[in-house]
Length: 149
Image (cartoon, rainbow, N blue to C red; front, side, top):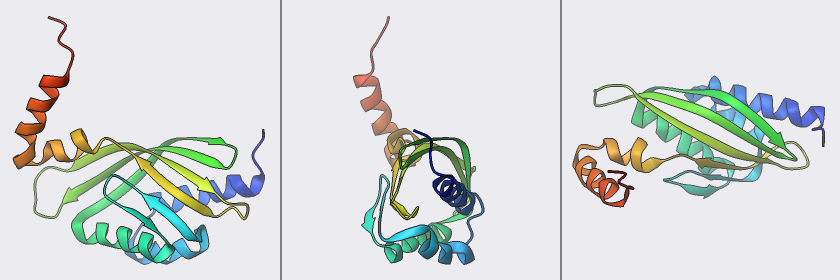
């Protein structure tokens, strides 16, 4: 099934929104998303444009220089699959972070985002980097991993 040109434009606009994201650009969510948009990631599961915008606004408070780069995309029906890299600098200093993930973005019949569901490994890419949890997670991984020796 060939996607409609309007849907292709909506996917491209949503990608551009994320790749050019700033605190001032968050107002664009109203035009890009359905009023009852659902946003889910490993830390949040919210409904509504205001709640979604609040999560992104909080990101700008929590980290410095956040940047999303969409590496690849695929479209199946009215669902876009976006593979991305997210990089940022921790506010408390330290080395920059890079998180790899994928978003499953559902579009409604008016080409608005109805759901944005993030899929990424928070165990290794977030919790495993925190000093207090790094050792514990390493022990758990070692215990659960297949030993070929």
